[in-house]
Every structure is written in structure tokens, then in C-alpha cells.
Image 1 (tube, rainbow, N blue to C red):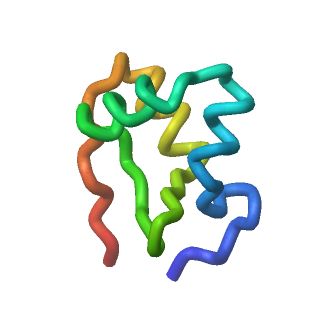
Image 2: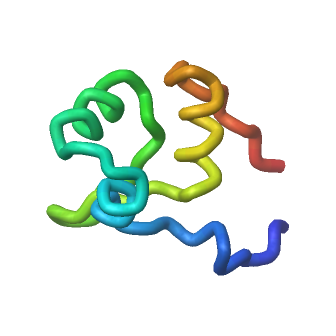
Length: 68
């Protein structure tokens, strides 16, 4: 079992919009293209590690990691 890492907690997508100066439309397109996100009610979240990996891969979907 993996220990909880608060540095890798899901952050609201608004955080990434402000931090990286991304428009809402661009972020919406990236979600359609495979940016890994989670939705809770009307709020959308993404882990910063997933966001950075996705950008570094050139916007290609990441393979799911298997959980033991």
C-alpha cells in the first residue's frame, strides 16, 4: 500500500490555469485529448505529477499504473 503524499494530492484545475497561464478552452481541449483528471460534483481536479507527465509526453495519454 502506498503512503499518502500530500505533495501529490489532487489540485483544482483552476490552480493549473493560473500557475501555467492556460486558458479554460485549452484545458478543456487537453482533457478531451487525455489529460488525467477527476471530477467531484462540478469541480475538476488533477494531480500535479500527472499534469507534468502529460505535458512532458507531448500530450499523449499515459498508461494506467497497475495497483497490486
